[in-house]
Length: 157
Image (cartoon, rainbow, N blue to C red):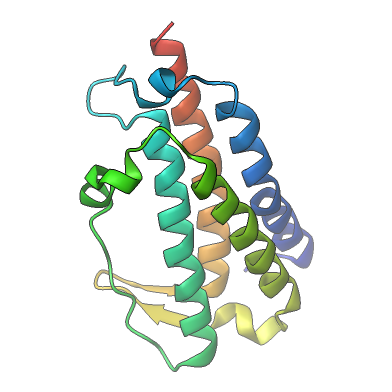
C-alpha cells in the first residue's frame, strides 16, 4: 500500500501530464505528428490520442470501483482503437484538452478519497485491481508514453 505522500506524488505526476504532452507535441508539424519512424510503434499523434482514450477508460473504471461492488472492468483493443481515424489524426488539440479536463477531475477525485476507498476492487479478465493500483499504473503510463514520443521524434531526425 502506498503512503499518503507516495499517493500525492502520483497524483502530481498525473496532474502535470497534459502540460508535458502539450509542450512536447505543440511545436510539431502535422507531418511530424503522423510520421511512422519506428517499426511497430505508434505515431506521436496516436500516442497522444491513446493517452486520452486510455485515461478516460481508467477514470471510468475508478468511478465504477468506487460506486459498485467488484465491478467487471471490460478490456478494449488499444491497437484497434489507435487505427480509428480520430485516433490517428495529426490534430491533437482535442485530445490534449480532454486530457487536461479529465486529469483535473481525476486528480480532484483521487485527492478526495478516504483511506478505505484506495483498496476498492475492480475485476479484469486476468486479475483484480484496486483504485490505488490504477493511480500507480496511470502515473507511470503517461510517463512511458512521453518516453515513447521522445524516441519516435529522435528516430525521425
